[in-house]
Length: 228
View 1 (spheres, rainbow, N blue to C red):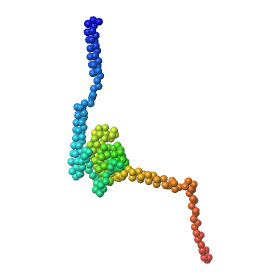
View 2 (view 1 turned 135 degrees about the vertical axis):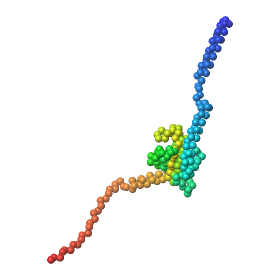
View 3 (view 1 turned 180 degrees about the horizontal axis):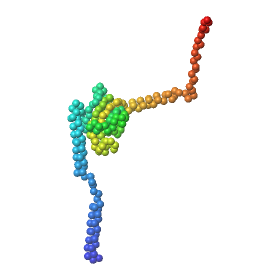
View 4 (view 1 turned 90 degrees about the horizontal axis):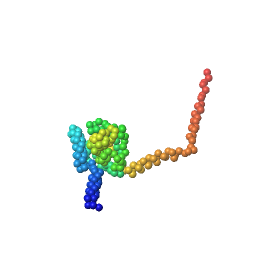
C-alpha cells in the first residue's frame, strides 16, 4: 500500500471519530433545574409569605382590643373562649372532637360549621390542614380559638380545588369540645355496641304478646224506688 493511501485512510478515520464525538455531545441531556432557578423560586416564596404576613399583621393591628399570640410555626391566634382551669392539651395517641369554620382573613365565610360537621381527629395520624394539625395541640377542652393561617399553613399553592383559592390565607375558628386517649375511646364504642345488642337478646323468639284480661266492673246494688 502506498504512503498516500495511508494518509487518506488516516484522514477519514479522524473525521469519523470527530463526528462521533460531536454527535454524542449533541445528545447530552440538558438540565432545566439549575441553581439560579431554585434561588428564584425560593425568593418568590419568601415574598409571598411576607406579603401574606403583612396582611394578617395589618388586620391584627386594626383590632387592638384583641390579644394575639404568635406561634413558632408561623401563624397567629386569639381566644374567644379560654379555659384557664385545665392544663392538659391533645397529644399523639389522643382523639380530638372539635367544630370549626373557615373564613377568608376579612371574615367572609368559606365553609360554615354546619357544612364541615363535627370533626373527629386522630392526633398526628390523619392528613388535615397543617395549621389545624399544630393548632389543636395548643388548645384546652372547651376553648374556642381564632387562627390566622398563611397559605403555606393552609391549602398552599393549589387550594382545595373547590372554594379555597391558590395561595389563600385563612381565618379558622375552632372549638375543641373534648379529647381522650384512643384506647379509652375504643372501649367506649365497644361498650355502646354491647348495650345496643342487649334488647335483641332479652326478647325470646317464641314469646307472643299476651292479651289483656278484661276487668269486670263490680255490680252495684240498685234500690227500687219507693212506690207511691
